[in-house]
Image (cartoon, rainbow, N blue to C red; front, top):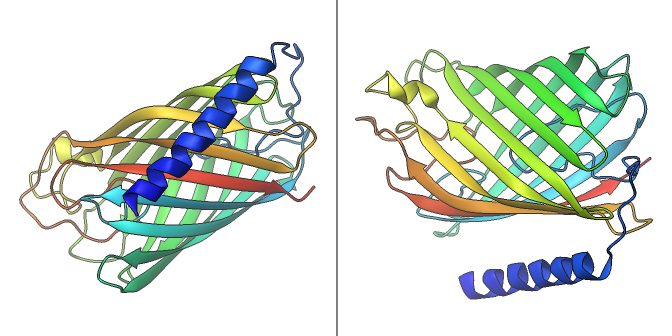
Length: 278
């Protein structure tokens, strides 16, 4: 399985690199109407009134020595819907199913409503917002969460970052879970972007010895986003090593996490295909 996955990722990277080498002109104004509505793999950005659209996003990942999406120890799939509701409101919802190495399957769902309080009326410039949402994880534990969103789009680069606070309704979980992430892309050629993404997960592990998800975890890795000219499809890929910054003295829970691992360092690779319905 790993050999086929590496081959697919290598071919995708080579094709995107070839596209970047062949297309030398850069549109100075940018065409964000056809850009991916969800360009980053680990950070969620809001939509704007200057480019209102709905999209479907299908993503899958492969993880080694990991647990839960998108670091499932095996292969998992996720389908998400994202849309602009007007008046600077964005809806984002997803459902995931994981296929474990032992042949078992499990699922999770989450949905949230985001609103920009600063910016959000034009595509270019800064946007800062807040969200409220709920989720059901792989073991049927319900949670509510809130996310602070920040993003900045320019003609040749873009940034998005999140700070998420989560409260799980289970006495074995943490009082509050803290997850942060950011992504940066720079336009290489036309609608081909490259950059980096980083995730810091369960950061309360820095001050809680019994953190319920196994400790604070970090990931930093390369990120690519590509939109073929005139296409409604967009493609993204990102991955990297998962490193434990701290370790707790409990067995990790099965909360919805991008990086949760089996109390040891590992890695995850995640790819996404988005389809713009507008």
